[in-house]
Length: 124
Image 1 (cartoon, rainbow, N blue to C red):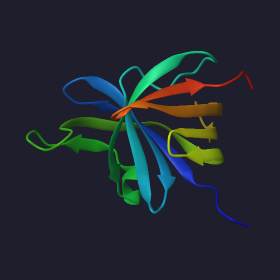
Image 2 (cartoon, helix red, strand yellow):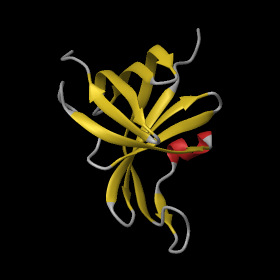
Image 3 (cartoon, one colour):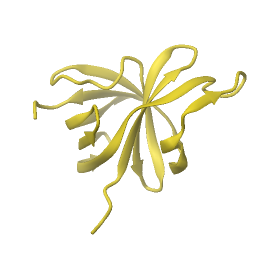
Image 4 (cartoon, rainbow, N blue to C red):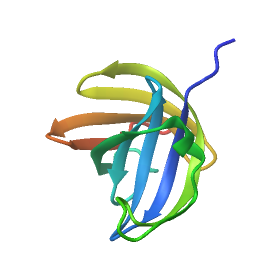
């Protein structure tokens, strides 16, 4: 039986409070900064800004990134779980999350540069 890939949502109190959404894929955590958090209601759209991939062991990270370092501030796990990919294309990723707080079908749609649209697709 294949193990499902994991996801994590970090609450990141850096220079501005935001959430980091990360999907385990290709041996790394594909990552997006989501200023207003993961959408919980179908039809709600959120900006998600692609950031550099993170190492897989970062999935369990909580703590404080010291002043002067990239992302300085407090990081805590807001939610985590597994996910299933429905479709993964260059400009659109469709997936189903199964976390403690975040469940259901979602999509990340590339808009321009590093900007993506993050939305919950339907009520489950």
